[in-house]
Image (tube, rainbow, N blue to C red; front, side):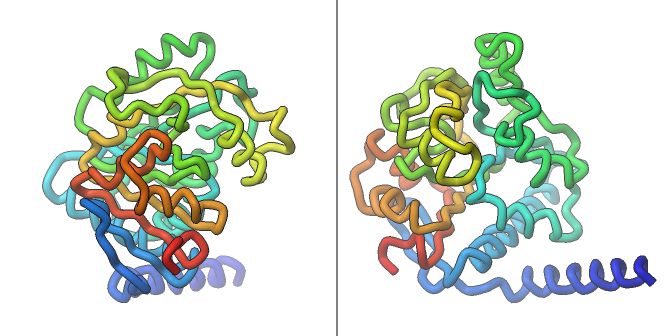
Length: 278
């Protein structure tokens, strides 16, 4: 009986997700800021599901044209709704997808649930049968890992990046003090600013700011921007000011996410609480 109930639930979920792919929730508004497409939804759930449907469609289209896909994932609570929906969408050949992630703390216990690789293992890497998953591993030598990870990323083009925006406008761990739109590096070690570190506490990833590491390994802004297509998912009232600066401010490293307006194929998904124009 329990097996039949689980199977029935799985069937209903597959049907619901198949319908979602056809009847994707329409955004309340669709706008373009420079080259950046922005879709605003009524709530976080609709936003995450719509982004997942779009990512799935892009994956299927790309896999129909080439042997494999290489994509980068952000690790953050802002991505949880999208990842949960993406993991349930059927008929994606994950065995032809190679996964990376975009940043990782230095000096954090490898077993910590706050470690980004572990968060992604729980939310996506451990749930889908990827062809390969490459995790940033700072131990035992972060400098060596920076070089090795950059080489791994550059073995072939990166097709897709799934990312968010920090409260200080960061993308990956490119905070305003260290972000460089012309960075010569693809991966580097950075010092996290206090606004970024406090966000990790506000996101319930750490009990207090003293527990948040001061340094991390991150993909740089140019490395992210070289990906063929970007999907940026940004829910929550705490991100409203960052979205405002991203869309309406100058292109400046004072708000690193503003550079997304120059990418030829980036979609920003926001919802009522994070939409500065709502």
